[in-house]
Picture 1 (cartoon, rainbow, N blue to C red):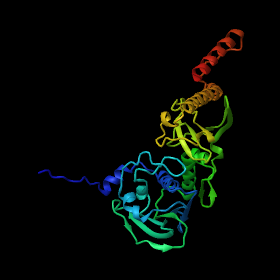
Picture 2: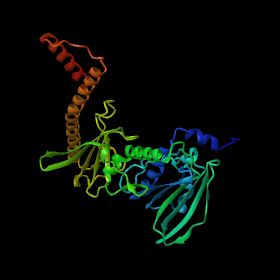
Picture 3: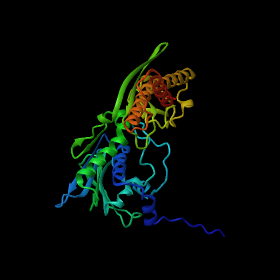
Picture 4: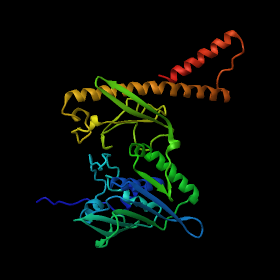
Length: 358
């Protein structure tokens, strides 16, 4: 007779797995949860105590809420991937592993979700509670009929942050900019607010250019963005949207992970992608029409060529900055002001520039 047992993860085990999460990253997880629930707006509010320290954080979204009938499915799963799952606008769900909701434990004593969902043409609201000392257990109230709009409010209580409130809020803002710049650019109708001030990603855009790429009987517009900083967990990619602004395909660029700080995003929106049939983002099965697949591949090839052209002056400027830094630090050879040394200096500078532009 075979004795079948189930493995069990403890609260301490969960805490160990989530130990790498900073408060800034944890807050970002709750924002992603809102967008995964098809929210168009996510708001973050910080409350201070009498000592001017943050003691409560509230994250609110206007998404679909948490369906009570699917509560166990959503809150019992931990580290269970929902690979391939997408939101209604086409982006892959970020909070798919089931642990983002528990990341509060390092800086708050408990979390409460007040959520309102729609079922059978009516709205219902209820609450969920989790304590940091019992992460594997949640308590929920019974759903009651409501007149509220759908959405979810997450309240993190008894917050303990080592930084001052101003510094912490600024760090949260910086983290969210690095995490969501590509997403907010891809989805201009989505918004994040921090204490009633909209998150401004404008300063993170180092360059924006519009490319026109033409084929016989077809012309595409591509928006190129170069970022001033690294995107937290997103690669440099091509994003393809249909005319309804839904993401139908994404692909890493050939210049992804080059280690040269040339962080970038390219967005193509066109009715050409309205009849995409793939649901798994595989290029080979995007279209039934082989000719369309060929056009798409040719487009992507031209986009990669354009990226290389964009990267060259960027790397040239980086090389010049490096040379100037070496000269300022006196780590660059000192040349005399004569024809022979001038040639040697120029040759060394050109060698450095060529090395950068490889």
